[in-house]
Length: 368
Ligand SMILES: [Zn+2]
Image 1: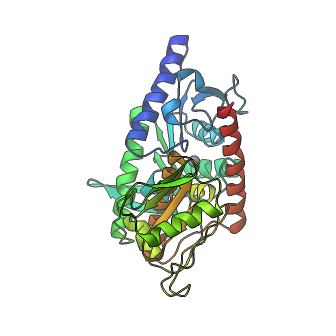
Image 2: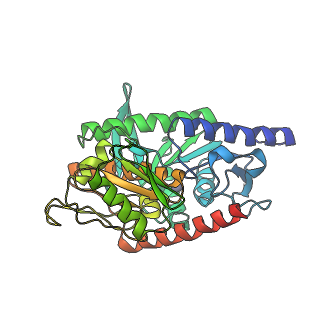
Image 3: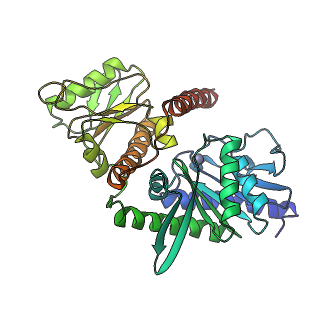
């Protein structure tokens, strides 16, 4: 199983990229979230780099990391979750390939505060252990995952609470199959137990962007009440150049509830914000007079009408729309389940700050 020749190493790097594209196309990997690795031998593994989009990956960006001390070769920064991968390789000598995703239904199932998800795939019963929460990139998270892997030696699919999955396999086919099977099983669980059978995605309503300082609406029939919100957003947020209006089932459902969304998932806290208000009838006669447009909050809810997702590029605004939809499915699942585990204010705040800092640094590097 060990990789010994240069050709085998090269092949492994190409396989990692092929798998990342496959998972990206299947909707299980989004943007730069998630990571993939392959064991080289009992001392090292190859892993995807930190902060690079799957579309842009090339074999020379795959990093070789030492299993025991996490040191790595070359100038490319390995994924910040390298410790989780290393811990799994140490616990399970039979594992040769690992996939970590932020896939929708498994991640949502991991917000319910349940220690293991009991569900099924086809006619087979499945136990999906949930490793307790710790901040991403920390040793504590790696320890929590290692503990779960040790406790369930026959299981290949694990959830990291409020974050995503870790899928193990002897080879890439096994690990990818596990990720796909877990997604079906977790969707079954959310449908059956939490009565939350929701499609994931973006249903575009009224989008716009700025062109030479002017607002350009995608749809000429954009109503005045909606134009007012767009104008307000661009005025209060000079960094915003694109607005994507997401009217997906989950986002509209949340927009009907007068409340405030606390993050249930790490990527929500990072990309959207640590406290997102939803307007209610109490705010103005029709709720439209109140919109929570804030510097560090990238989604603006409209009463009964979904949310406006903002970004400095179309890609950024779309990523917000996708992560918001997942966050709303999680929110509804927790409501219907009757309980869940929310991230604390400080955890969310820290992640949001850290993400904004490292994202702007990355943008700077790319800009140069
Ligand atoms: Zn992750």
